[in-house]
Image (cartoon, rainbow, N blue to C red; front, top):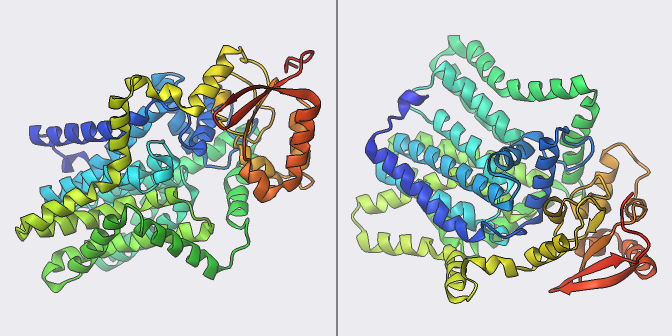
Amino acid sequence: MWDMVSLKPMRVLVYFSLFCFAFVLRFPYFFYYVIDWDESTYIIMAQELLNGNLPYINLYEFKPPVAFLFYGVFIYLFGKTILAVRIGGLICIFLAACFIYETGRNMYHKRAALWGSLFFIIFSMTLDPGSLGATQTEHFALLPISCMLFLLLARKRTDVNIFLIGFSLSIGVLIRSNLAYLVLGVSLIIIVETFIKEKNRLIKTFLIFGAGLFLLPLSIACIYVYQGYLDVLIKATIIAPLAFASEYDYSMSQRFSNFFSLIVKSFYSENFLIWITVICGLCIGSLKKFKEYRKLIWFLVFLFISVSLSIVQTGHTYYHYLIQLIPFMVLLTAFFLSFLFNKKIWGISVILVLLLLYPLKPVIASYSAMLRSDYGLRLYQYDNGNQVIDYLNRKGVSGKYLFFLQYHIGYWLTGAKLPTKFVHPSNIVRISYLHSMGDHNATPERELKGIFSKEPAFIIVPQYIWYFDLNCQRCFHILQMELEDNYTVDKIIGRTIIFERRKGDNGLL
């Protein structure tokens, strides 16, 4: 693999520039405690792993275990701070951008490679405007996906490359289980190509690819078998995600409709030019005069469709799912921009590049706010989530039971105990999740009463609990009765109310 990449000074300069570019874009969000509550959930699960406990035994969150391992590695290296996680996201985005750069060099040339890697960094920020700057599992998954693309589209495919393609895909699937569809797509490409070019190597290639693909999953399964928890692993990583995908009982046509609706909403957002350049890159690459690129471009399209089908299968429409499509998109964007510059259409090219920077408007606004504010870089301290958690730290809640209906990263940052096994606040009212762990008598009402039996010292409540409204109207009544009987309002910060248990109970068991 490494013989394909020589670290000449100019290439090192490119890598350094990519790191600096990624750092500048992500820096304004380094210190905010809460950007996306999925990120908060994975951090708590990662800490459970660092505490020496296997995922899913004491705490539940239904993502594959390697997702938590990535978060855990960066917390271990950089300390128990939110900054460690955000630096981890930066490093993974940077490394993935380097793979995109090398893939672009192999497919096209240096200029296209540079465009592709730069816009990879931009798109990884802007495709999910709701969690700008957060470190999602999709961001970690971009690293094995990009590595796989680099190996798959390399000019020379060795046995080591084939093994590493399989291994990269296994890491991707163990971060995002929906990427199993990508495994099927890549498998088909390798099998068909080998059958056409080297039919006598088909079985050997298949075995090498399979060894790389199954080495890590089987190793993890062996750990759970040894501890006697294989059934828990299966429930958490297979049964629960399937329950999530079938939660709303969508028909296949509805699932496709939801996905196309998500694409259309993304198209008509600030990211519309991203999609236009992808489509233009596909159309131009399909022309006869670009015959040498056609096969590579259709590989990208095929893999794009594979991942898209995995999103369709979930039935859900979250912007952050689209992040998984970025590696395939940016290489098409790079081809289109390279075509414009090669044709010396300088005016259009420069204007288009500037317009593609338009989605970075929130990043520019964040820097502007820091410069205009008297607090400067400390502006994050006045974020609602930061204020709530800092206030609870001053109350000395470490070791006590709390119940966060919002900002649950507070469990991790205050040292408080969770009163439930379900880390994500909304999961306590999702019957499919409650049942997926084997307790078919579980209900949101019973789970909520179990939480209150722990007598949390503080309950942190947003003004509107949307997931109660969506999944459990009766839970509003149970919560209201508990608050009226046993709690008083201690503090209101923004739209968050902090209730303290009345004196006589300190929340400790």
